[in-house]
Length: 147
Image 1 (cartoon, one colour):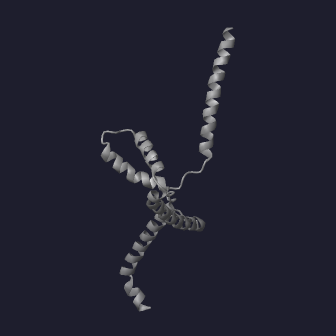
Image 2 (image 1 turned 90 degrees about the vertical axis):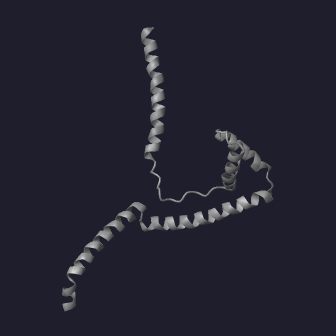
Image 3 (image 1 turned 180 degrees about the vertical axis):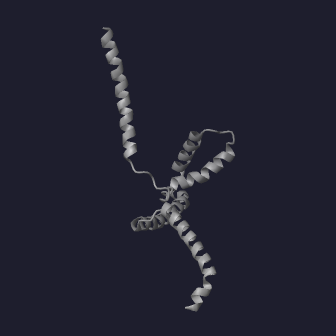
């Protein structure tokens, strides 16, 4: 009996470890996020919530609960008519148009093989090279004029 109990306990631990390691393996295989990629635009509801949070904080200064603000905002959004939602929808559409422009530019950069980190390094190396050339030009201007 003693052997049966000890064998059962490690099996439970092993299954827990396997499930944790399986989840970690999936994350490790995933490519990292590009910090230069434009963020998706906020929907009309989130544009509304930006304004609503400020108003709610002024009316309820002692409230520290994020969920209370979210619930109140959701209820208010549901109660709004389409005409009242229109300004938020239009602002969200403007953000979406701007996002699409930024994504086109971003995808063009990716197609060209450029990344933000490479650009910084290449600009830096170019400026260093240009600095060196400027120094040579200053000292060697007389040689160029002779030719």
